[in-house]
Image (tube, rainbow, N blue to C red; front, side, top):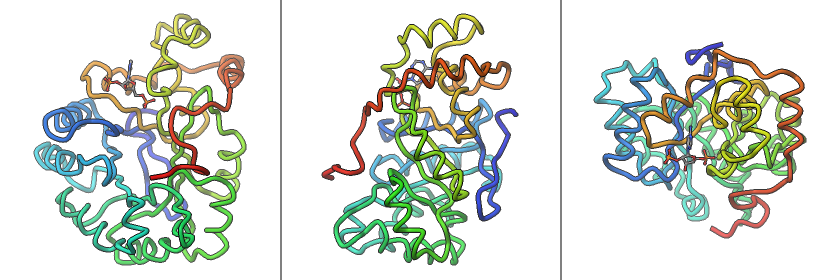
Length: 276
Ligand code: A2P
């Protein structure tokens, strides 16, 4: 496994196991530089969203890199208010325009909008984008088992992936097992717990044993679980560091010590109660 390793999604699309996340990366130079540095370091996968407000900077950085579009994997996401307003087509067209792309590799429903069962209703629009070739794969984010069950009951195209909060204090064993059974790839967001896990003593201890950082240990744990990882950083050294995950391996015992840190504790909103 290395930085160019890809997993195959349930529709045959190949997705790099590591990408750069740009949540909370400011539009303009901050996001532009982060994406340029990541591409220079060998990343070929970028994860953004309409609501992050930085699709234009992502698109500009990708275009300026000169890397052929087909070598890259770009994800963006459909925002909640656009689902409630039945504006899925406008929202998707806007994202493509800002990214300066005629397709994305993966388009996700960002949150399971409850009103009018938006988390199920919007899926037919997603399927249309997929059939048109404007989204090579389609998936969801922040879906729990019951959301996925409702969706799977009516979907023509099953979701390719579910992106949810997951890190050593929220290990998501049940949800990730369900996804694996159903052929849905699993992608943690906030893998570092927004940074708060970096000082955890167990993780520091394991990191020391490997001559690695705690961030690298957490990301490696995700990779060994078979997940796609999208760490966010706007710092060049950290972007490079977060990609150096392929020259060491965690033992079964170390994996278990990390699983034992679970507290079912979130750093972000709960998909059952979110109010945005
Ligand atoms: P920054 O962008 O300033 O580097 P998460 O992915 O869990 O949301 O965590 C992201 C946070 O962790 C960001 O605040 C990011 O800050 C920081 N971060 C990312 N990679 C590293 C790293 N290798 N070492 C320390 N902090 C990191």
